[in-house]
Image 1 (cartoon, one colour):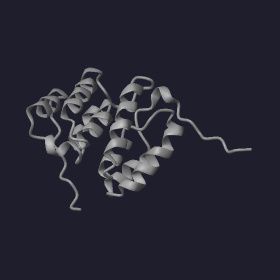
Image 2 (cartoon, one colour):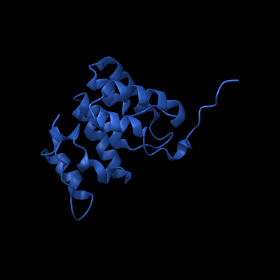
Image 3 (cartoon, helix red, strand yellow):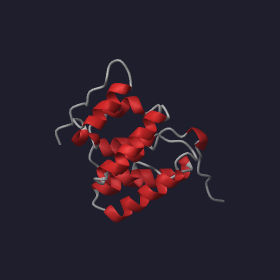
Image 4 (tube, one colour):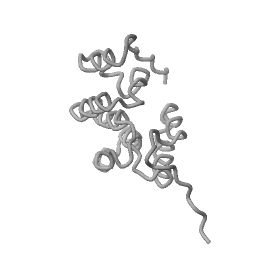
Length: 151
């Protein structure tokens, strides 16, 4: 008998694998990629942040393929469009990044308010007018970007 893989109720998958988040923050990109890949079975959908891990590992072709899979899966279930934007930003695809940031704002994503706290991959774009517009439209006190860790 094989052990059953627990599943998150996929209609409410707002997040991704927390271990993967931690590994990305620590710069342990290979561990993050593994955690996101293994977590896909439990989440019931492809991991948007696996794109970030793959891109940081230099596995660009795999990252682009994962981005396409994630974009096609969006809405079945819902996960934060900002996670898709993060993968696109990490790949240097600002057109796709802005499309997904706008989607998050239009759909009033619960992830959107955290955008200003992400140190990567949005730091490179923090002064761009479109990012500033998105941050300002989120509320009366626009978030500012956190300083990245010294690594």
